[in-house]
Every structure is written in C-alpha cells, then in structure tokens.
Length: 202
Image (tube, rainbow, N blue to C red; front, top):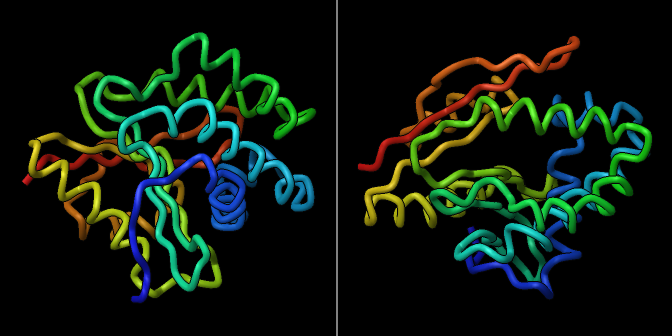
C-alpha cells in the first residue's frame, strides 16, 4: 500500500465526497433510499459533502483520508464520544443540502436517519459513521489503514467504537478489527438490514 493517512480538510471536501459517493453507490441502504442509479450517483456526493461540511469537519478527528498518487482513495467519517448527533443548528444548516441530495426521496432519507438515531447506543464511544474506498482502489489495504489509525487512538485512550455495517459480507471484515455484532437492525417498510457492531478497547 502506497497511501498516507491524514486528517481531512475543507479543501478535500469535493474529492472526499466524490470518493464516498462512488464507494457507496452499490450500498443496500443507499440503493433503497435512492433507487434510481443516476439520481444516486448525483445525490450521494451531495449527501456526503453536506455531512462532512456541516458536521464531521467540525469535530476533532472527525474526517480522515487515505491519499495515494495525489488522490483521495479512502475516507472515514467519525464522531467523537458524545458528539455523534448533530446539534439542532447543524441539522438546520444541513437541511438544504440534504434536500438537494435526496430530492423527492428526502422523506425516505429522513425516516432512515430518525430510525437509526433511536437505535444508537447510549454509552460514550467513537462512532464510525462512514468508511469508503474508491472501487478502483479496493483490496490495497486503504480501509485497514484508515481503521487502524482511529482504533489505535481508541485503544490508547480506552474508548469503545461503534458502527453499522450495511452489508452482511463486511461483518467478518470488521470482526477482524475486534467489532462484534450487537443486533441486526431492519429498516421499516421493507427496507434492508444493517448490523450494529461494537468494539471494546484493547
């Protein structure tokens, strides 16, 4: 792997959101919320740009990127303990971007977000809101490097970590990092499943 890991910056916003958009294009939850592939290709980068601009980039250590050959090939969006839920002010700031991202599917996106908030653990933890590697760069270890970067700090500071895997095939991958499945979450109204995973510090 020839990538370096560093904190994300505002100047990375366009590139990191495009990388995450490509990474999540075949994601079951995103596909359910935005079923049209063309709409999804446009909407996902807008969604990730909105989240990063108004929430994650404001948090200490909230965005990390893997760069290889002068481009961003992987991204993680983290929330520090006690700060996983955006403030009401930030939610209002995000609303126009989310409407542009989801269009007529805005209510579906909002319903999924509300449902996931209700299932979120109450214990303080680092929350991995998103991790994605550009499809052209998968298999090169960028995801591992990104996870190790934050999880090493979790262990050093004795913080647990939490994520939701939207693909069952990825559950064993996260288990290799010490995550264990807490529960299977089924999105209402015929939506897909997610696997809530928790990791105690080592």
